[in-house]
Length: 270
Ligand code: HPA
Image 1 (cartoon, rainbow, N blue to C red):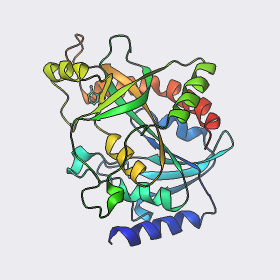
Image 2: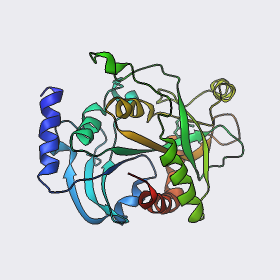
Image 3: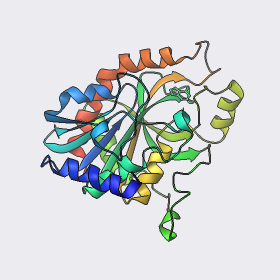
């Protein structure tokens, strides 16, 4: 199915539930704890949403969970496709455009990332204030028209950022702030690459989110981004990086992440 009919079908499937989410949250590693805090949950497998990605990992087919958090209508995207899985930077295009089609105007992008700042420790959270598209890939290369020349100033909405920071602080959770650098992965960085990214002005490094931010801004969706820092960048400390290590810290930080989202979601002016 080509993209436009797939988006129309996916939007119709969601509308048929009678739910009208105002906020979508893309859940990265470690962020899924919030799923159990959804009131009146209703799940739609990605398999029933033709514009949504087909996920490769067995047992994690991908589910869209509709419901309420803090009285707010939300849609949780439990599962994302990364550019490193297929080489396709537009893997989330259909899903994000479906959100735009159903009138969901704001997307909260979450991820796991490596910290490049010695003061930002593993297990803490960082509000993304801007990004570096180190990969220099775009999800918009086949877009016609002048809208493809998307303005990326304030891509991470300043008002939403302020509200998120204040709400987290009120809940006793520190949200660091910094620049997120997108690397393609799936290999981790070399120590030389980590030093390069630090010099370029990044505080965190990860393998997702940036292409999604570009897609959201192109579709007119507001973006808020939060990274869970699961490790220090390669070579900064003695620890040996691995996916298992990332997942261990992500697991240990699960409750903090869920608590932060529960505080932040009702505070956003959406
Ligand atoms: N580098 C890139 N992506 C990551 C890292 C990292 O150190 N940790 C979690 N995701």
